[in-house]
Image (cartoon, rainbow, N blue to C red; front, top):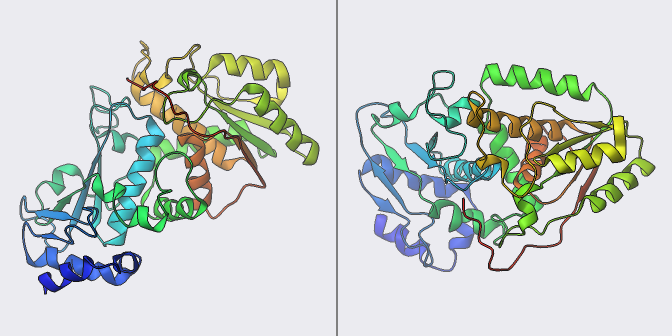
Amino acid sequence: MVKSIRSLLKTKIYRFLVKHPFLDALQCLIRKRKNVKYCKRVAGRDGLSMNCESYGELNKDKVLYVIRNGKSGYGFFALYRETLKYLAFADRFNLVPVIVWDRNIPYAEDEPIIEKMNPFEYYFQQPVGITEEEALKSYNVILAEEAHITDSFLDVENNGNGSGYKINAIFINQLARIARKYIVMNDTLNNELNREINEVLEGRRTIGVHIRGTDYKQNYNNHPMYVSEEEYIQAIDDLIKKQHYEQIFLATDDQDILNYMIMRYGKKIIYYNDVKRVSGTESVAFSEDNRKNNKYKLGVEVLRDMLTLSYCDAIVSGVSQVSICAKITKLSRNEKYCDEVELYHGVNKNNKIFVK
């Protein structure tokens, strides 16, 4: 049976197969055999290859999928969006996800936060309550591989538009469904952020504006071209003329941009005044600060900005991970913006390589 399935998947019809849920039946191979590698070399790709390991006797009725994710050069929402893609892979094959953000990410503290050492759990609940420690004592465990999100059905179904910054609406809707199903903030943080969002928005019709400054001004290779403040102002003014918006919520990592927008709009601008921002071209995510739990707080601040943008009535933004995830999050609640303006001039192609 295994041989015939492999032969079938090597044919040109694999594009049809990966779009249909009956492929989920292949997971039975994992249950029956340890260390089996199935769906290997699908049309020259390894995107559907999986190794199943056994580490103990727990959870014999489940196939766990451990998503160990975390690159030292990733900001919070680059990491978050990649995690959603791994969750989409787990969802397609009825695997039980366990999420681990590595200790080398910019948001990991040396001491526990809310008694957790896994940075993912600083902010979110495990999708099914299974921790990494429990997973590594379990009977059927698949470790996520990068090929699962770069060379798999995700790429096929989105015509190559599932990665990078400019992604299509279909893919955003897919990730919104995944976020709705799997992503839940921990109760303490959820209550705190909801209270702060309500206090700043006050139920008024609001344009959410996200301006990515600091290191974006460097125009690094494979990053979106920097959009000037004047372009944002033009887009904001056009919306205010056409629609009745009472205020502008500004999310930015750049202190100079905040100062500029306050000078332009005065009291119409609302923002969080306890956010760490910097001037110049250094990324906030990699900046140093002596405040207690600085790394954790950097994650809270950008998460709060993203959530607040998702609760605004309109959004004006460049193309960034924060703005993409705000749109995903709003859709995950089955909501839509009244107005949506995206400022995009393409991606830089040069020799300026971002190095942390």
